[in-house]
Image 1 (cartoon, rainbow over the protein chains, first blue to last red):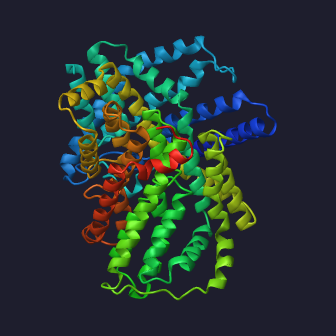
Image 2: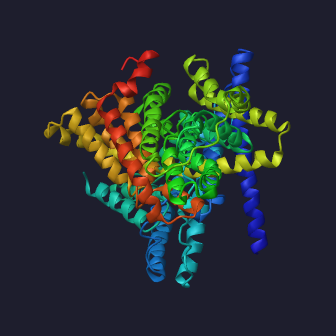
Image 3: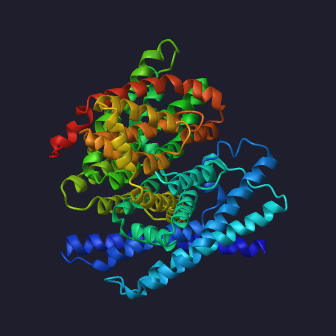
Length: 168
Length: 431
């Protein structure tokens, strides 16, 4: 089970790195075509925003570990174990309820977008935006799992501030 | 302000305090708002997706991160340090000056202070503390404060975010940061110079002047990067986002030439590292997009502007207040959050008071960067505690004198707008 989870995580990392590489390459193609051949390629520019959207939502759902996310943990990391478990239970529960409540409406919005197509890539927008539904489901599942562990008294990991991936 | 909005704010603040990632807290709080207001809950999805999908400008962020990661992998830092040592190592407190000059040059390649500290921190720490030349706490403190310059001298990730929320030109914001960045480096070096004798800082072995051309040549690939970036931005040849992509391509090529080969594993490591940072900032941006919808529906910035108007603030008092608020918030909050949540509320007032938004943007970014070294919550402090293996208390004690001179420099650039606006105006800014 643990081996499988690790394997899946590494494949998710491959996807994230691949998406960023695709974004980078699409930019290079766009620059070369526009300035060298004087021939703008719209699909490349569309691909860059698509990879950006997918990278952030896919990555947040499957790549980023608990410790890397930007959070305010002055209190969280300084309280005792029992209080921390309590805090984590409340916040996980709130997230599961609120994201859960918005799931159906979000799915409806995304599937409604099938009426539009990306102008150059000709991909239906409901496919393009489907990553949001995947993201919601993954986050709800992750926090529900976390919640079940917390309720059994497992200590949540205290954050490690030096691991925060802030871009500042 | 409606009850729904109060609930929304309360939820975001509480969930953040409870330790939920801030991006999720903002989305969840906004969903609660929609729920209470009876607005379709799919609106959150709509705002987030359309916002992310149309924010072409933001793509500069992953590309600048990638450029710095590519530059970082390898011997470029050593070459850069040798170059800085040849320049300023001969002064008393030579290595301390090298630390600052290195940060200034690195700032021209990277848009992130944490990236600067993470990449040069270890090397600087071992160089400075070898043979007991400097105390570990001083060395770590200096790396922390000099890294602050990174996003003030272009390129700059926080400035890209500011350009997004304020609709100002990235190119002029970048230009506006040049003199303030140099000023901050200048006051840091002046402080080192002023205390060097008293603290008996050592002098490095002089590098003979005839060595200088060779040392410069070796550091040349790194020194060329800011030149290329500026060239592309200000000749108007490419968009800022494309300039960022070109910078990333250049740094990949430069490190390939220096190594005479590209190691795929290194490239993959750089890609994945950049992707992780991109994802975590991206989530914050996503949260801010949804929350900003709520803020717009509630008309908050205008309400605040009207409220402040009643006090008949002068631009001077407003700027003073803004600085104080941002510095205090910087002691407790992560900077991106301040930039995406608090600053948009200030913008309409600043504009109404006739404050130049490029000037204001640079002042805001300097504030937020100083926030990275103010206790109790300062990401650069935490990073250097780990790299330098020093206690937070010792580190903070060494940081304090630098903090005061940097706040002094901040006051100068706040109240003498020309410090910021001279270069942009020279290159055609009409503000």
